[in-house]
View (cartoon, one colour):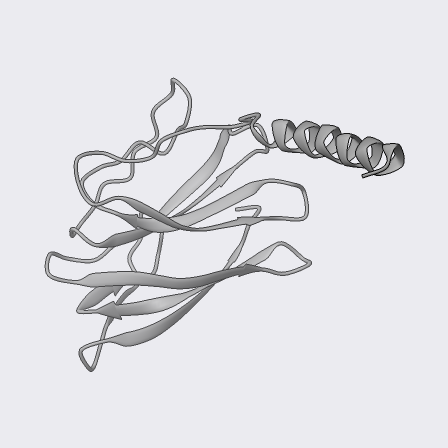
Length: 156
């Protein structure tokens, strides 16, 4: 090996190690959950850099990543959620889609369009409440599993 090759190789190692060392910096951590089967499934970003997380929960998990508390009470063991956080991890809002005991819900995908509309798709069996607020919009699957599509304005 000539000196130019050795120099190029050492430069490559230096640049590579510098690049990989930057990957080890943790910028945000947090935990959502309680004592049941809680699982984040999808993470997306809106056009403002906010983080949108969707998944499944049971019991009454705390969605606030900081010292605050924001609970959504489960209705069955397999309910689903969508939560929106700022880029720094502050909770903006969290919504739950629930249903009575025995019903199940699963998220398949979440897409955010250019207008910050969120489209959530998945499947449910039994009864599902499509109103994430205090009201109810109950739908009953007419077969063992039905597909759902939910559109939400992320500013809500």
